[in-house]
Length: 135
Image 1 (cartoon, rainbow, N blue to C red):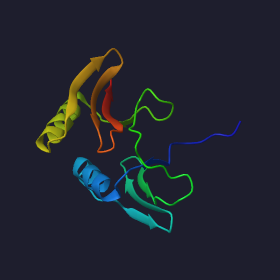
Image 2 (cartoon, rainbow, N blue to C red; image 1 turned 180 degrees about the vertical axis):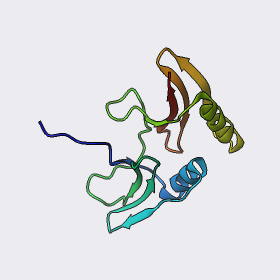
Image 3 (cartoon, rainbow, N blue to C red; image 1 turned 30 degrees about the horizontal axis):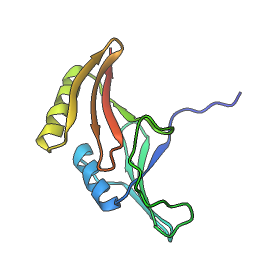
């Protein structure tokens, strides 16, 4: 059976690229590394620690298949449930909670489970995001 080594990138469709880039830059503390701009989509890629890229994509309204963006993200609908980012320790998770609060980003607070601790929040398009540390 063929194998793969990791997730190279995640691409997320957003309503307003500038708004989303500003949000993610504020959360991550760095700007996108790459920009792709053609006649039907506009994408900015954040090079995340560990080698995975997060692409934020805004499709032109006139592009084939582009919706009006009226449907909000729901973790109960088929598709993406959330994106989880690994942190190394509970202390690091607490630092992320403080960082989000300092920037006025609503979050769940640290939630403990038998398998780890999570800190959940949402981006401007209501896409669920999470910082997570395993137990």
